[in-house]
Image (cartoon, rainbow, N blue to C red):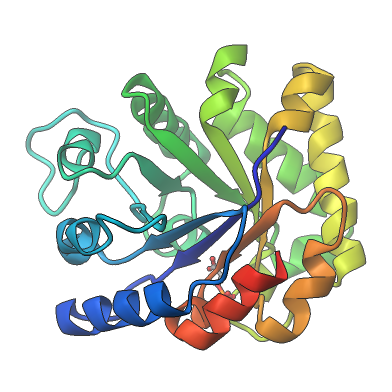
Length: 249
Ligand code: PGA
């Protein structure tokens, strides 16, 4: 059975003091849930966040990592550095990394391979831009992002993959995909994985929806059968909102 997951991507927000304050508030407000709850603070605050949440069920995850083991990559962070501080799940392929930092499918596939080789869990993001949706090309785009990023993986590797479908036009814009659009794409993603692998792999991978999920729309989106949770940006920075979204799952 696939797990339900709600992950908060804090992006480049919150300094150390603010991070600890938000974690404290979130821990206090965390509703009872069967879902896995994750937060991704900025790199500089990861180690302290892990310590802060030592006795909590909230998992601390990273927003990114480099594909190389170590070496002359100024400003980058390796998988081993994350593991060493107790972080073993990493977001790879967020649309902001693709758009602003030139992360191509090829680079992302390398990152996925490195993370999986270290037994890390990968939360792999993908999704079409507005023009793709307008021109009816969204299924092709999503299929090619999946293929290029993940379809050379061995079957076993899929146990360590979580998918996050995030239509770029819905990220941080206040515009959400309708629950029907999310369901339609998530079903398509499962079918694409069934065709490339097996039905059981497709049915066991958690597929999160991301893009302007808020307390007001989470219930409806999460009620769709192929939506297994959410990757939450803006609303995860407000403890009450994030707690309400966790409650909705
Ligand atoms: P948003 O961001 O919830 O602010 O739209 C989602 C994301 O970027 O993961």
